[in-house]
Length: 321
Image 1 (cartoon, one colour):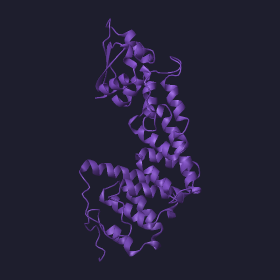
Image 2: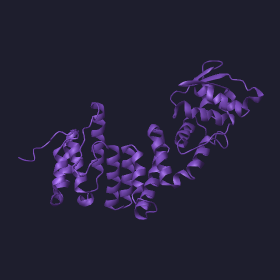
Image 3: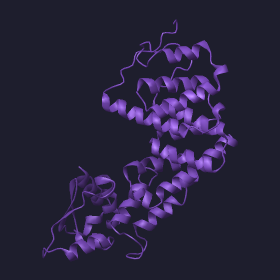
Image 4: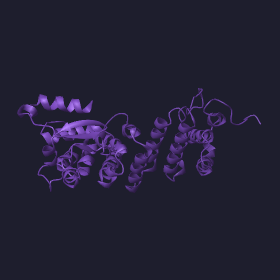
């Protein structure tokens, strides 16, 4: 359990060498037995909880709603006790949010957790595409606080700028390596990066490359075989999964840049087939149909084959009629 892990970590570093007492239990899904004075020295929020408590000797504090849960609070406790721990791209956003929540600012105590996490954010993580994307991914479970603290915006700005550089001045192989970096993100954050790239006047073909890769990865069982061959049987899951897939597809289609020729015809046909299979909104299907009709002269027999089968292998249209 998290509280036993933090106790062991503190004992190993000699924090308990002077037999620091514990006089409060902090509940964060699990129980942490800690010392009030150590906590209030860093957290103005906990100080106010104790001062404003109607209990003469508050023995239990419930912090179940703090960002990051027990794993992050364990690191907060280590910070309060002076125990070293590593701030990484995977935990810095959660630590920044919990520091704000617990009011661990420099106005309350010098060199507090807010400034420590801000210092980390301003260095290596937000100087690379991969660092910004990993931090952004961690923010998915930290909303709306991560947006209120501008962590999301900072990550989006860095990611879009680095993606544009990666697209225009490829330094790795394959040239579209940067598109793979974005595929771990939830579609709402992916959308923010695409919108930011558009605001930087990035070329439509570059935007299209990112969208194609994202669609193929996020809907990999639905948007895949662009040749029209080897369409396999698919168990697409229950209705909840189908709804999620439909919403994801509609979000992706809404991101398509206006240039009709930015996407290969077979990709658009795959999207339309998927839209039909998932019973997407008419506006989504109509948009895809308009794009396909605009470049109809490029449609091949294989493209029609893509459209003629549903994602579970059943025939949608009778091509012989």
